[in-house]
Image (cartoon, rainbow, N blue to C red):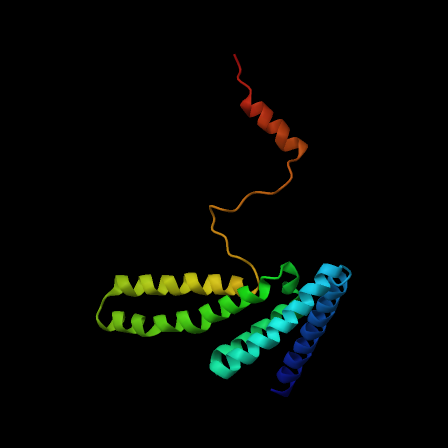
Length: 169
């Protein structure tokens, strides 16, 4: 048991060191631009204000924002724009208030043998969980219909299109 604990602790230390090095690299590259310095300052001020307000109002929501806001700053998600901390706040609110409210409704649907309603509530929960996880990373979730293919076209793909578009007579 002692060997397993030692092995787990060593792996945790390795992962933490790698994470710290990646974070330092991200911040070092991003802070070369003056705009990103402004973003970092804005994020830290918003982090402090929102954390204080949420901790005073609702401890569960406040601790969630404290954790995910810290992760957003640590991982460098804040350099995506000034709106990132607000997206993190929305994701935290979605995950800590809306998703847990589905659980009693799922239980009631199961007791009343409304299996279709239960499945729909579970799917809504998964849908909102996905959106909240994306929002906590400062990313606006997009649906499959809105995704565009931004891959550069290669010469070979252009030649293939020309061959398929030509009309043999």
